[in-house]
Picture 1: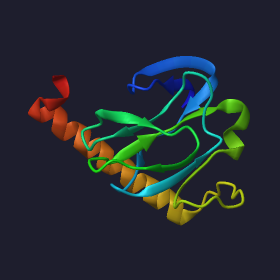
Picture 2: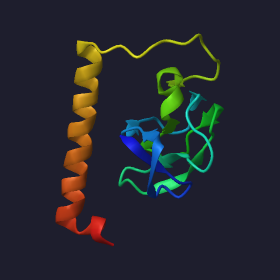
Picture 3: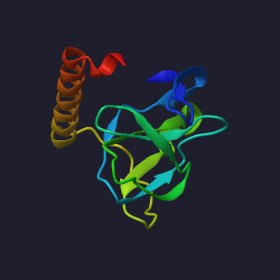
Length: 130
């Protein structure tokens, strides 16, 4: 999402030089490697299954996801968006450009459907309105 980022508390902010990832599904208590994602006051933030911000993630290098995590969102400088990487593991790898393929499209479509269903459930139950 170009022109947006999140702060350390997960609040959506605007800045024309930054871009914000979608919610990326992650596993609890797992090492992830973050590379070239953000600058300044922009943050990477872990979220629980109800999309509540848990805590700020590392801005670069190895970070371990919290035990109650479900998603992460990354704030990325638009100038280096083509160099940003986020992957499971604790060792850096050479840059691998994002490629669109059927498997990725299906995985992201399934994640988006899961997130939409969860938000709808939360709206119906009233838990999103607290």
